[in-house]
Structures are given as C-alpha cells and as structure tokens.
Length: 628
Image (cartoon, rainbow, N blue to C red):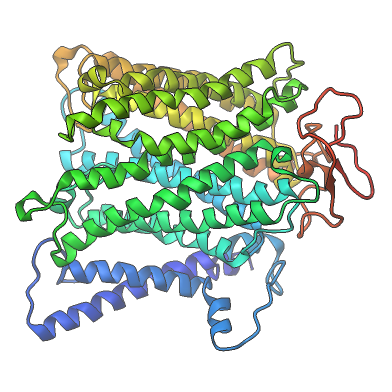
C-alpha cells in the first residue's frame, strides 16, 4: 500500500510527465528543423545517438515543465473550470488514502504546502551541501587531487544556485505555514495558486540538477554574460531553472501580500500583527517587484544563445554590463528576501524565551520595510570593478552604508529585549543566539565590501565568500533551524529530542565560526574565489584543511537534525498545547492545527509581545484560552 502511494504520488507522476514532455518537445522542434534542412549549430547534445540542437533542447525543457505540472495534477482544477465544470476545493486526504499521502500530492491547504516547502528545502539543502563538501575536499590541498577544472566549476556553480533555491523554498515554508495562522485566516487568499507556487519550483530544481548532466556550466550562480553565452549546454537548463524559481517566488509573494492585507482577524491592525508577518510582507514586496528584472535578464540570455538575438555579446554590439545591472537589481534585494524572514523569526522568538516585551516593536516592524526599500538602491556595489561609470560608484557606496541603519535598529532591539530578561536556553533560543552572533559577523564584514577602496582589493576574493556565508547562515539558516525546532510541535503534535537539538547547535555554531573566519582570512592573503587551485606559497593550506573539516562538521550536524525530526515524529511524547507559553494565536489551538485553523474566530484586544505584564491579553477566543 505504502509503495503504491509513493509510486503514484504527484512527484513520481510529475517526473514522468517532465521526461515525456521533454522528449516530445525536443522531437517536435527537431522535426521542424529537419524539414527545413537546418544543421545543429552552437552547443549540442547527443541523445540516443542523435545530435540535438540547443533550440530543440530549450523548447523540450519548457514543454517538460508543463508536462510535470499536468501529470502532477497542478492544472486539473483550472482545466475543469475552463470547460465549465465545478471545481470545489477539496480538503483532506484523497479518498481511500492515509492522511500522510497529502504531503506527496497536490494539496490546497497552506499548512500542507508549507510543510512541502519545508522538507523540499531541507532535501535541496543537503544536495547543495554535498556539492560544497565535494569541492571543499578538492581545495583542502593545493594542486588538482581528483576533480578536473570543469568538474570543479560545475560543482561550485551548482552549489551556489541550489543553495539559493533551498533558501527560497525555506522562506516559502515559513511564510506559507505561519502567516495565515498568525493573522487568524483559515487559509491563503488563493489556495490553488499557493499550490502552484510550490509545485512549479520542483521541476525548476530538476532542471538545474539536470544541467550538470549535459555539460554543466562554469559561470557560478550569477550566470554572467558573455561567459554564459559560451558555456556548455547545461547553462541553459540552469538559466531556465533559475527563471522558474523566480516565477514561483512572484506567485507566492502575491499570495502573502493579498492574504495579509485582506484576511487579518478582527482587531488586528498593522501594528498589532506578529512581527514575523511584517518580515514576510516586506520580503514579498521585494519578490513581487524585483524578480521581474532578473527574469528579463535570464530570458534575454536564453534567447541570445538559442535563437541568436543579441543583447549582451560585445561582438554583436551588445553590452555585458547591462546584464549585471539587471541581475543585481534583483539579486541584491533578494538577499533581504532570504534575510528578512530570518530576522523576523529572531524577533518573534526572543520575547518568548526572555519573557519580556519586544523592545521597540514599531521600529522593528518599520525597519523591515526600510531594509526592503534601501535594498533597491545599493545593487551596483557588486559592480565597482565592472567598468561601469565612475560617477556611480560614490552614490552607491553611500547608499550601501545606509542599510546599516534599519539593520542596526533590529540589533539594538534584540539586545534591549534580552537585557535583564528571564532567559531560558532551549534549542530554538540557542539557534536564535547563534543567528545573532553569525549575522553580526556578516554585518561587520559587509561594509568593507561596500566601500570602494577596500572592495577593489577584496572583490572576488574568499573574503566575499566568508562574508556571504555569514550573512546567509546568520540571516536565514540559523533562524530557519530555530523556526523548525520552535514550530515542530505545532506541525507534528510531538516534541523533538532536546539533547539531539542541542548537539546539532553545538556542532554547527563553532563549525561555522571556523569556516567563515577561515574563508575571510585566506581571502585577505590572496585566495581568489571560484578557482580550483591556489599557490602553495600563499601558506593557506592548513586554513583550507580547517575550512573543509568545519564544513564536514556542519554537514553532520544537519544530518543529526534530520534524524531527530524523523525519529521524533513517531517516538517522542505528545507535545503540550502551548509548550513555549507563547502569546501568538497559533499556539492557542490544538497541535497539529485543525484543517481550517480556527474553528472559532478570535479578536485581537492587545499587543502581541506583552510578556511578563499582568493581565495583558493579546487575543480573545471563545471558549477563552490562556495566552501567557
């Protein structure tokens, strides 16, 4: 029975549909090219003895994605509606199947979709981490040990974009699961589009990974032209997968914004919302507005390679700097798409574990919007060495420094919230504190790259690698793990093993400090990023060994977390109704949450973070449930 459910799941059906669609799409274009007498030019691929032209492969990949969505059942309700059939929303497991089968198939409930985002994010994170381990072992010693240059280039490029995809999935997990629960909504505003936003991301990851099998690519996750125009065929699948991920982000962002604006509980004004919802809205505004620009850049690159249009190649009069402007106008704000929900988690959990009101609630809420706004004004600090106009450098340097203001507001608020608080140190709180320490490393090392003279020296060095990892781990990865531990009882109804959670933390945190400081130190000494070898005379071999060992420790710690969650879902004790004594609405209902969240609507009557204040109610429910 279980095997049959797995084999007939939307994942398996979708992958079969993607393969069939890809082959049909390739065959269709190849038939047209054959009828026109066109010979394959540019990048080609040998498929079952036939030489496939790049345009055929690109069209096949697009049709394959459509095939995935059709076979998985994502379009079923919309297709029925188009022919005049009624399509009521189905809630619960499919007829005759167990409840857990919902998580393997298309479902419209936001909690199911949030969990689907979550486990997919962790799976993709493990794959991206494996790529990092492989090329880190190569870097542990100078000289080429067991990888070729092409293999190294593909691994580090795939590591970058796969981890970006994992983080976007993780943001989707937290936002989709938590926002409706926190604002008192029964579901998202557009449940079917919510399911679509998840499922269209699955074939995008498949495309990126498949690109490794058809030549790979050597452009890094940035896909800079004109290098991407000369890269192997795999870069096309990378560009298409990247584009689809952006499409998923836009659909998800629309849902978050509309849900928050229109479906808040009675009495929940903007300044009575949980702080995580502010962070999710700010991140969604960036996703909705900025993602189009990178989508345009990616489609222009795809078209330039596949059908000969000219946008970026200097040989044909194109401008490669244009690609960088389009790319970074999205890709710097997208850092805050990753970071803002993570910072929201920190602000959400600190009052719970310090039993104090959140200091400066309104300032923290507005600082999320401030970070989102200023994030659109700093993109060109990535381009100080690109050859862009010198007159643009100083304004972008100054605007980059302004990002520290709203970010500093959050740091000062966190310190003030912890000051003289009655702190407890369960696993979620440990990861919150770890996040603050690691994000501080990223924040302090960032202005050095935003200042013109120092960036000219450190640009494309391993200092950038250390800074970026500190920003991503402190701003997203640590808070994401804190969120997983904190809301695990809500999702499963059971507690996790606290001892394994703390082991995860105490392995990962010092491991990351060693890795990040090691990366920055070799960068100062002259180690360039995105290269497969280095000069033994630099004297950085021992540091590279430490970085590699630290990466292995981090990887093992994440596997401990995965084991903890899987085993605890069956063996650990049933969680208390509100194990953290939280005031947030989602903890005032049973765990796991009911299908429609709140059988009885609630009204907001106070402020969300008045911990430790006598008789300070946040919500009123019928029947009344304690909120502190």
